[in-house]
Length: 483
Ligand code: BG6
Image (cartoon, rainbow, N blue to C red; front, side, top):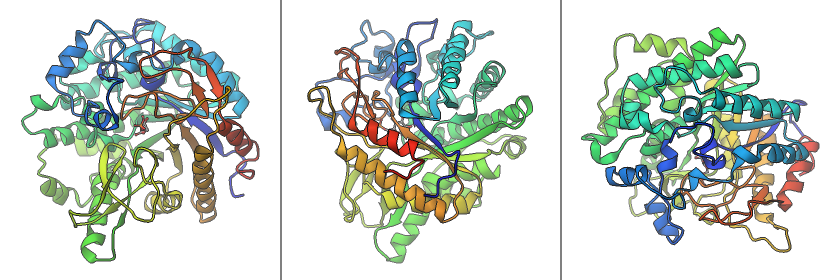
């Protein structure tokens, strides 16, 4: 096995999908707390209605809602109150790194508050200290899709340049109070998903935008600036700190060797993936930006001095989520399948998950080689896993399908390291069952730990170890050898 001695084997979750306790500890309401879900919806309705393009009507309704049943992010799996028990399970599993995100609205309930909320800071001091006590490094995402609602209603979210200042103040507060506890920082989760999930990524309300597509890229420009300023601040406040740039990697193959399809794959890779990492890793907009903005009909405002800001805050490592691969073609009649937040073209050589995501372990090796070659920075797989329906029988969950998925991906990581890739860590996604980010449901489960809670928040909230728990434990204990 090629895994280095101190390879980081971990698990990942995000605050809004796990914490619950949306009104405890003086937390302010955040944008995820407003995403509506109805347990009676069928699979298709769950995808269509998932509020990735938010409407004013739905937003207002959620702001005034008198109940929480239809807002799963408000209760999730109550990690906020259960974290000690959950971390004990993670320790038993052998995790040596734990990735979670910080809720901006726990630290600054309104986003524009003068001073931070001490209770919120204390929660993270306690949580991260507990991780340390249990032998886990901390990989903290500063923003994983949930921003204080007040920043949307009062300022218009990321479209407003002022949000950059609020964000950087928030990040500096974290560095000051949590800097000694966090080992790896991730300013933005999947920054490229702003394009595919504009409500989560940019906090835009679609019917309020005249030119939605340009607004999305304006938000992204502001996030690039916020990212660079944050990296710069961390390097100054915490010398030697490690800050990562992250995308959801939609690895794309041409559907056929037809040059048109190959070209389409190049464009898809540039426009959906590399564009974002190129800016964060190289500190400047890539050469194809002008053409890309023309192709996508985008106009954005870049102010004097922005170029210098981007140059000063280059990331130290590259992180990405990898769930599937995609196929590019100019043939509009090509069969489709769904993929995280987007609809993709079907690859006839791959099987799909229950949600249509195309399972492709070799694609992970391809991705790792490709990203390392392009950026020459350490790589961190910040998310990877299988969303599936699990069945509990006699207090057991026999999830061979998940074990197979994970095993094949770990094998390809090993291959990639042998290829020469500098891969430093792997935080399996949804180490414990949480609310799905895309479709807001509990029944799309990723964990090696089952949580007894249904779509409407019913259940004991008890944790049950799945078969994959034992498998991952063995994998970690043998540093990837016994899989
Ligand atoms: C990533 C997100 O896009 O995919 C996670 O960072 C998310 O928040 C994960 O949960 C899996 O997606 P989903 O929609 O199955 O929860």
